[in-house]
Image 1: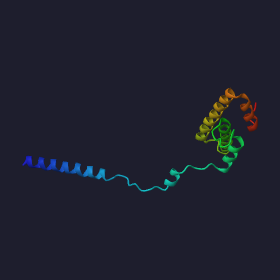
Image 2 (image 1 turned 60 degrees about the vertical axis):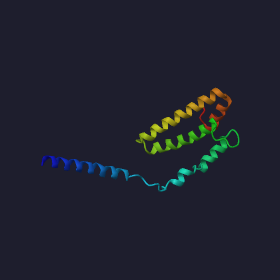
Image 3 (image 1 turned 60 degrees about the horizontal axis):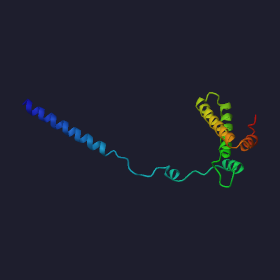
Image 4 (image 1 turned 90 degrees about the vertical axis):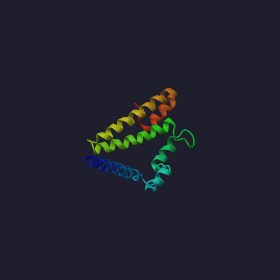
Length: 131
């Protein structure tokens, strides 16, 4: 009789494992399109203010990645964050982000100063960052 009980327990255990395996294999996500699918496919267009800055500081037509443009865009972001932090002085997450942006701008200015000192002085005077 003990042998029969052991066999029943073993069979129940196997059935439980099989049911569990079947349950986990059915929980695969469906391939439905998400709400943000259109956003993921297209590249976001820059805002009007960003376009204006790019046009003002570009070195040549279609330029969006020159150090001058990058420095000008970072300066705009820095100004916005400084204004935000004046109203929210305890926002330490934004403060840390601000420090990273300032460091990146400083590195770009150092690079531009080593590469072409005249361009560096021009961007500093245009942005009002001169010493």
